[in-house]
Each structure stands twice: as C-alpha cells, then as structure tokens.
Length: 112
Length: 112
Image (cartoon, rainbow over all chains, first blue to last red; front, side):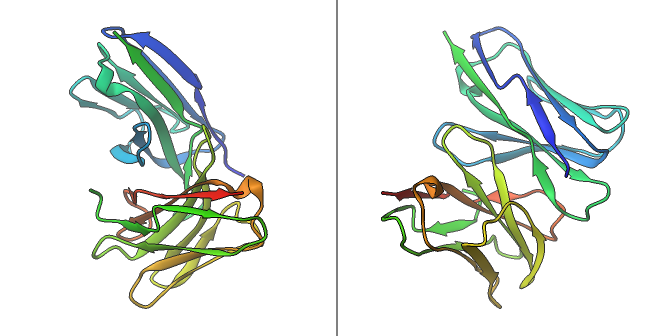
C-alpha cells in the first residue's frame, strides 16, 4: 500500500535556526496537506498543495510540492519556540479516491 | 477550537473490557475519520465514514468497529481490550471526504 515517509524523525534546533522536514511518498499524490500537532494537542491543518512544483508561504513557513508530485517539504525560517511540535504531511493517492495517508511525522524541538 | 467534539476525554479501563468513543463532526461535515496515535507515534488511520456509509478502511483491528449515525455523529467501539490498545484516539471530520480534515481533541485511552 501507499507509504509516506518523513525525515528527519526528530530535530532539535536553537531558536533562530532554520528547519526543514521532507516528505516522500511511494506513489504519486493528487495533493498534499501539512498538519502541525503541538505537544498534548491535536493535529491542525496548515496548508494544502495541489499543483506540481507549487510553492506556498505562510509567514516564516515555506511549503513545496515536488515536480513529480511524490515529495514535499516544509521549511521554517528563523525558528521560534512557538514552532515546537510534530509536523505531519498527508497525501491523497491519485488512485484511491479519498484516503488521506499521513506521514510518519517530524518532531521539532526549539530551545533558546 | 476545531468544532469537532469527542467524548470522553480520558478513559481508564481493564484488559478484556469494551469501550465506546464518541465523535460529533463539525456542523455541515459529512465525513468522519478515526485515527489511533500511540505514544510518540504517527497517526494510524483506522476507518472513514461518509454520510453514514463506510468509505475507507485502514489498519483497523477486527476487535474494533465503528459506525456513523443519521445525525452524522460517529462511535468507535473497541472490544477485548489489550494493553497495546492504550493510545490517543482522534476523530476528524471534513466536508466531503477529500478536503481538509479538522481534528477533535482526542480521547486518551489507558488499558490496565
């Protein structure tokens, strides 16, 4: 079945450093979504990318969808302690109508 | 607040028992999803319902079952509970089953 892997599993940065998480799917995706889960919280939708090569920005966050629609990345510029949490990508396989497959997640820790 | 409600928030029970988790989707959302998240693990998709009908099935054990009622709320039934079933169970909803998912606060289940 479809697998969505994320790397790294865990990253610890100092406040102000940049952070990137990569998401790779074993199959072509029709779209990809990103979610953030704060410690003790529930996943919260951040953004959806649909087009091949699409790049979207939200303040310090930059999201990219690969040309082949099999990978994606989330880059955070100048991290802050409020960025702490686990970031999940989630993709819908072009072959399976609606099932959203979540990635393995990247846990980000930011210290002063 | 996502608009998705889950009850109870916490549940402590013993091995071999049966429990029911309840979820009310956001107003207007027809699709409900159930996920299991074990400690420091990703989100394991269990099952999806759309307007009362099962739409997609993930890694749901035979001891687990779910349903969506005419008023669109959903219940997840877990039976013959084992220690390994201890986890956070999230419900999410979306409008039509392919768009953004909105997660509830989760039910934390502890099996002793």
